[in-house]
Amino acid sequence: MGLAVDVVKRSGKRKKEAFNPDKLQRSIHRACLSVRTPEGEAESAAKRVTHLVTLWVATKPAVTSHDIRRVVAFHLDRYHPDAAYYYLHQRRIL
Amino acid sequence: MARKHKFDFDLIVIGSGAGGSAAATLAAHEGKRVAIVEADTFGGASPNWGDVPIQSLLQAAHLYDQARAGSRFGLRTSTVGYNYPSLLNWKDLAVKRTGAGGNRAYYEDQGITTLHGTAHFLSPHEINVNRHHYSAASFLVATGAEWKIPQIQGIESHPPLTPRDLLSQPRLPKSLYIIGGGTTGVELAQLMATLGVKVTIAEIASRLLPDYESEAGELLANLLHKQKGVQILTQTRTVQIEKENIAYRVTYNRGGHERTVRVDQVLVCAGRKPNVDLGLENAGVDYTEKGIEVNHYLQTTAKHIYAAGDVLGDITGHTHTALLQSRVAAHNILSKRAHLSPDYSATPHVIFTYPAIATVGLNEDDCLRRDLNIKKSITPLTVLARSNVSDFKNGFVKLITNKKGVLLGATIMAPEAGESIHELALAIKYGMTADQIATTPHAFLTWAEAIRVAASKIS
Image 1: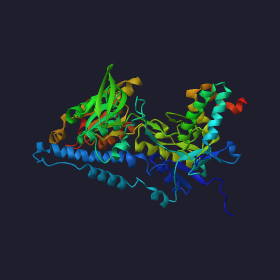
Image 2: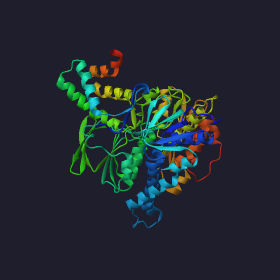
Image 3: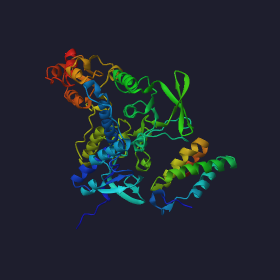
């Protein structure tokens, strides 16, 4: 279920949407798997980072998708630096 | 045809403390469409839970202390006491009377739109507050700073008090461990010890007030220990905080030896960190964890966004410095030409202990670091007639000049030092010499006479 916090999408071109922790957790999980992290580790890192980001988002009235990417990368760096780099730069990498 | 505005406001000020309020008011007086955003209480930290509440309680505690010690003047003092809830009522009254605490209506009367909520930049010209988007041609970021929680084992599960928490509590602790012997740490140590709390103060540096003249820190430590029974732990690192029933057991390391002390509460005053988590990346504003980076004109890396106050990171926590920056930022935002930069050379710093400590300009360490040739003189208060009639001996005036006698810096440790320092601030600002100060008459039986004596020693 989403928090009452809007996520403003890239360049404001797409409609804003409510922050969804499940969606965030799935994206972190996928980023971890993309850099060949074992499934269990990816799941645990995604869960922990999602929790920290959700706490951060709850203090904000609205955030941009770039904000989320930046804060996820900051927290994920502690658990998996490669995944954090991939998460932050995936648009440029892909 | 009415002119169509490109933005909702000409200026949005984020933060209603000293760094923001002056700029918002000045811009509104110039006819600009201004909004001010505040996430907490309007007025900011200084009037609500900083300088004003601490100073009002220190004033009451000093009066109590003086009354108790009045027997040496022939006064009967056996029934002097205090009621802490009444002291807190006095503090609340002082906050209310400043007019700055919770002053939302003040801004609205001046045509400034007030927004209560957390601001977050979405783009260089747009912020979000309470899920509403607001745009502006210029911004002033004055979000201030908050107390930094040091990395100590056990601190996350047992969060210590901040000065704001301590002054909001309905009753006093029996014992208090203060982490940090800077300005606020020593003010609160003296306040609490005067009211009968057993205080331990731990400072990582080799003396209290490490940013001030060594004589001031050492004399204050001596007074706090001898007169108030404060345990002073310099060169001490706090390593662990554990809960023990309703109290705390604090472990500290001093000189390679670990010791513990059991206290009712732990207070943290070990520096402040700027509030920079407001989506500055989305606005192209560069910052570090030490604060927002600005040029001489207080302009950030985004040219239409300025910053003022403690968020700049060079944290002195002084309201008058933030006010100066706010006025300068307002001038630079409003004026298209002739940008100003703030002049900090004669900004006084005051610690409201008893005796108070006031400084202006450079201290001796600053001069050593800059390899300056200096002359200095220290005059103890005991040479004054005022010291005799007040029966007060602990303090001094220290002046530092260059070789030509031009005043570079001064420290006064004396009662009402905060009042006397402005004479020396003026002297520094206008390049006066010690000789000029020494030949200016100073009234007999005032503490300021020590300034003349100190100046005459140099001249």
